[in-house]
Length: 178
Image 1: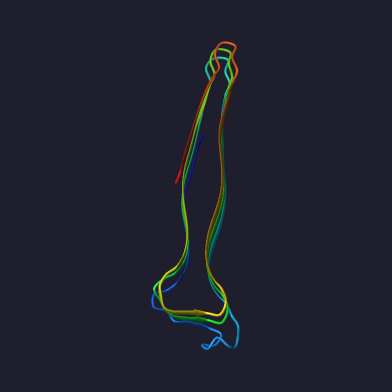
Image 2: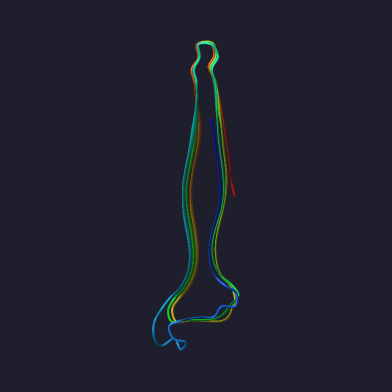
């Protein structure tokens, strides 16, 4: 059994270069309002595979589970012109990841029974919130720049072998998180 998944995911919220923004009045005395640049991503992935080898004379099974995730979540407000907000300014990037990998191998016996599994996860995630330069930034409320990443990675490889004239199983698990 071979199970593979490659995910490239990019979520971006951005105020462009040189943009002029006015929320409420330019004097900051009337009409309240907030400016929010928000990028959010919620990723849930389940990848499972298994192999079974039973024998009365030789039985073999193998499982390979491989997952590569490259993810970017960005909220950007860079190189702005004049920004006037009669309220709050928020630049926020949020990333939530729930990734589950499971590879199982079962081997029997009775004159051989061999099974194995290889489980590989490569996970790269970048979460960025940036409020760059502005020629003028006026806000009557607070200015927040927030980035949050919450990742749960469950990566399991398991094997069971039963003998009675051979029963063998091998398991390899590799995780690369950056």
